[in-house]
Image (cartoon, rainbow, N blue to C red; front, side):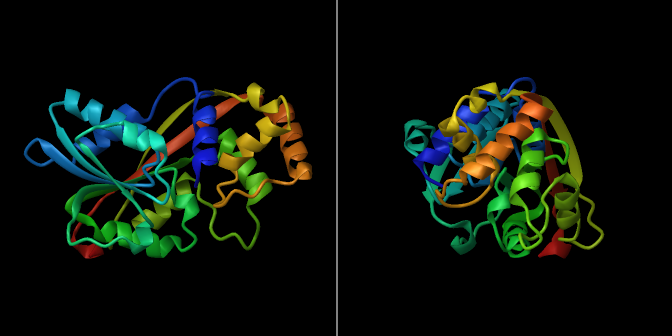
Length: 252
């Protein structure tokens, strides 16, 4: 990810309407608090704004948050947060090493970027203390963003599809007898501003493709996506799921 990606993501988020995942994720994380505090590893933290909002929500519930946010690229916005609760670490999660465990390991819209997903999930769950929580936010299968992603960017060789059911299954397989939980949230998303010109649709596809790197999609792809959105949903529904698992000793 790079600064262009961050700017495109912020532009897409500005099109979101309706419910936010913040209070839902905070309520899940609250279950892992110990003595009024919770230690969180936020994988793919980006600007840090999302996890900061979760910390604020937890604070209102009387819970103190201590967050380590890790990302391959930390945009300038991360360093402007100046929040003592959040420590930012730039680097690859798959090479991240620590002797610590956390009450919660969270990944918001990041699992798509890990080509060896099973290996990454095993790394994540090993960093959760027994009794803690592993959580990930993903698109639902009927989310308009996921439908564009699946239609134009998933091929037979791309690996597993990552909708809510697939991630729930992956999580449940991480520990013996485990059953992952799902919390849903949704709201309208106005995509009209992304249909204005080639630069706008490329901005949209930079996020929805869920591909690492800065390669532009072909003009043929961008034209096809534009027609798809005009036909199906210039104002569509953004539907996400938070999949989470209470971790026990059997997964270690």
